[in-house]
Amino acid sequence: MDLALCHIDEKSLIATVTVNRPEVLNALDVATAQALQAVVAPLAARTDLRCIVFNGAGRAFMAGGDLAGFAADFDKASDTVNALLDALECVIAVFRHHPAPVLASVHGAVAGAGVSLVAACDLVVAAENTQFLLAYNKIGAPPDCGGSYFLPRLIGERKAAALMYLSETWSAAQAKDNGLINRVVSDDQLASTTAKLAETIAQGPTSAFSQYKALVRDGHHKSLSEQLAAERKAFCDATKTDDFRAGVTAFIARAKVTFKGR
Image (cartoon, rainbow, N blue to C red; front, top):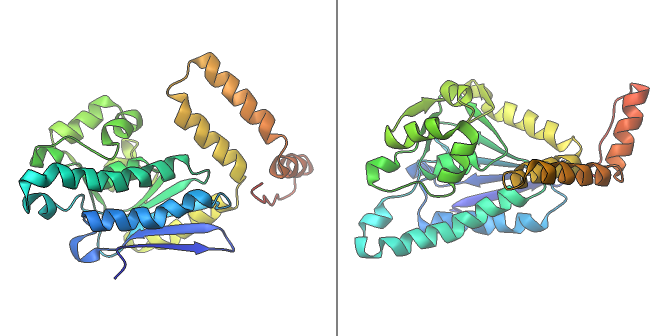
């Protein structure tokens, strides 16, 4: 069985990445992390993609790391951590730097590294049955996979601290209220809602989305004047795209626009 899957719809240019270890709620061992890296890494070269969907097979999105790998040999636990993170940090880098928006579609348990990976995505839709839990304090370790980077920026340091120090568990509704996710839908509507959101993104002005994504990603390290200069350049670059011309023309004519993604 493939531990991770990637399907690309060549018509819509939507890629769907699935963690596929449902018998253990998609817990990440080294083999699964490396399988995920193997299907995600090639997407970096697919700059024509217009949306990437990230989900998990079975009853849950992801139950975090597979602790059995650590317990098997504590003396080599750091080696296991390095092998896991070598793979997962590659996945995060592709998600963050790919020009296409990344939409996480989650359900059931989202724990540990699962929370960090969700936080690394651009948009998140969750089923009502989703539960979010860091749980690192239960195993005596700090977050990985960017948890200490993404979570304070998304939800604020105080809320992130409560997840870590107090082991708070958030429902999907709480995660939405606290800014971790964008939308909550009924369990039986998750797949159809995800498909609709992905299609909406894929039909949008892909180049403009890519520019926005880069501006937000890089803006944390810039002064206001630097960010304004970056925005100016991005807007001027946008005026040279087919999508900009089509969008402005359609807006003035009050007509429906069809973006080609270029």
